[in-house]
Length: 468
Image 1 (cartoon, rainbow, N blue to C red):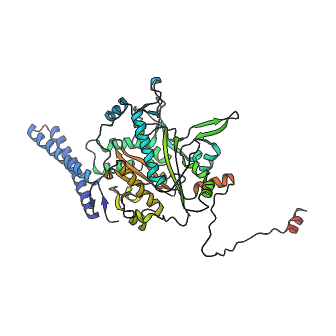
Image 2 (image 1 turned 45 degrees about the vertical axis):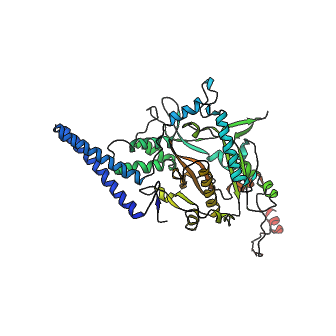
Image 3 (image 1 turned 120 degrees about the vertical axis):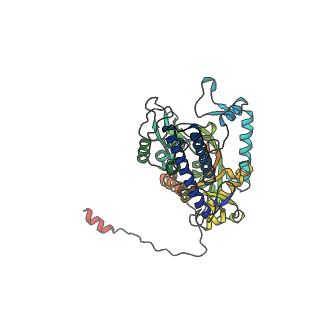
């Protein structure tokens, strides 16, 4: 685990520490240069003296900026995404839905070229994963009875932290407001190295804070709404669209993920595979999430197509039969430990080393991380703009034991493209408990196992005497 990948080259820990010390020194030089210019102006020094001090300040800033780019991941790609989005709109790759009526926020229609790209992407995804891996593809309903999503935990736990603009009544994601505010503070002029580190740490952990922590931080930094207005205390808002079905108005939701359709059909899929594990099932279809504040064009919408895979294996045997084919794949892994360092940078290592050293928990998760990277590279994502970020404990989905997001650097920053989660037996056990359905697999051991069990046998005569 001895190397850090920082955009195009590997850096050993000693060099990283040296660069960090140099960056802090350069940042202090900027502070001193700014103070010198201020003092010279206050003391009405000559134009020549002030000019020299200003040039010194500019040189110090350039040196500090250069070192910062070497040390830290970039915040975003320098691309005019507004101009690019306008081009796509003009050529009808996509457009806001119902635009002649003013549009519906978070909903988009695809034009002919957009449909062609989307269909090509879906077809290649199906070929790359479903056909090449011999997965079972199914197609399931989008309208989901409430009891299904209650059992899965989505009704209670599928929430985002939210605040309300107390003047306009507009709702905003609390963690997004915090991230934007910290970015603005980091990029402000004459910010000390210690403050930059403080703001960066808060931004990194923005989606990891609970409501109480969020409230405290929002107040500390006097964060306002995008319109500059006061905001409410943060609260949790569920992200599912609810509806009713039939004349009896049975409560339902539009599915927030397609995976539950696979889980509830597990007994049939298991039978289809001859009662054997492991196997994988895949599904492609619409999902709906009532996002608090859709933004960034197509990156955060309320209706979208999802392609999901669920790989089923024994809980005590998560080795993958094809792991050997990907073990030498080199990936960038932004583990929790790396995210919390003073210089938060990802590791670069092979999938085989990541699993053997415990950075990735098991071969199955490692196998799919490698396959996902290969898929993304083939469709055009540059390797230097891609990393896999591990979820911290407080941001982990309620169903996951471990989770890694494939994040891509864009003009909007680092954006989650997909997630690879070890869901263990969470979903199957919840649906089994809720319905009484058999969600287990008969497993024949190579050698018989003897198990002692304590069996309670009621004494009917003694019970009857007590009742009498």
